[in-house]
Image (tube, rainbow, N blue to C red):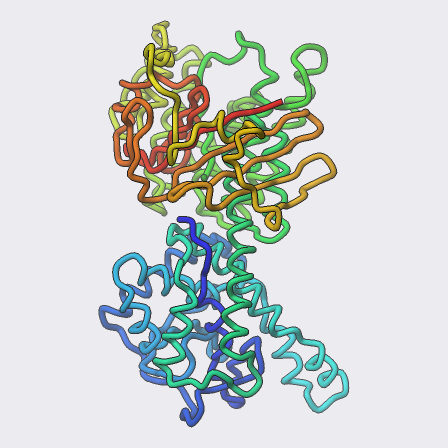
Length: 551
């Protein structure tokens, strides 16, 4: 899911075939392929359309922002504009010619290319980039219309659409496109476009601008990764700062949800051991400075109420987003408001799961929370039945833990490393070699450094190994630096105990024991062990991370 160049993004709105009479406003000066005819091509509803529509629907669902009507999608038999958003009638268009060029890359790469093209145009819609162009058009005969037109920064809009459209495609699971410069070239060749189009940057300039935008996007994704991993390792206050940095550029239901989850997990630290018997199914869609003791109850209540605001923000973007309802129910349960907790779990979350079948695990986690509520109310029979039902599914790991707690059984423990076993490595590098400044293994890219505050600085090395990268956070307030070494997709190596990508959760537990803690996600779990994290989707390992905190 990592790569360095997006490439194709800058072309999408940039080559908008905008005929003055149909008001198809692009965000760069209106342009067409030289000699192209006016008007729109025939709408297609063939197999190509089905594939492109599937990508479109996934992007819209991932963005989860239904506050404004989402434009209909059309695949048109054209070869003059690549892709564009049309405002009268409202629709987002991908041309068959552009589809065919993307399809030549084959498989998932082709879908990724299509996702970037469509994601770019969706970003124009969500960010309301059309407003000033439409206003200027309607009032072009007035001085104010002329001034508005002269003030428009179309290049900034296109770059923003590259950036945020790329993050949308990444969030939807399409990854980042590696060979974008080649895609730009092939689109130019396929459309018989000259290297210099009147009113547009040259092809070389466009490629360089695209590379810089891609690097900025990769930085944003790494900040998001850092936030998730800090949450998994219990660095909650620090994680919130990273999430808030992402929110400055990109707002989505998942990010608001994750901030709420992180704050709720922070609040959990302020409960005494005898106050919480069970493990709550808070779903992170992938240390509090307060101490236990006097005032802890007040502090945790403040944190939980803050978390509720973030869950509400996620729901406001998408009323069908099931994880936020479940997490809101968990927060109310922790506040002692059982009535609201049951309502948001049993009614709202359940209803949202029924509306969106992709949240099957959330439906299982609803049963886990209802089991906890039943147990807390003294109905152990109902709790046991709910836990057993949930535990029997492929998403039942947390339910099995709570069933053991209900029955008074001991939980499994992390298995110590066998004597003589070598250290954990990724791309033949240990965390000791990475964190030791005298070793010289770590090579950070100082041009990619991001200062989040006067106390927190984010560093990264996107090419720590052939199939791995390193991100780390220096927290001067705590006097610590937290390092994460992550596998990339397709990593062929194994852990020290011979676990690799695609192995089952059961296989991980057999080699490493039960983790000291888990973080739920809408599709699986993050298994947190000492110095290693396993990220499981469904029942399969999708990536792992070695980590270390250094003072």
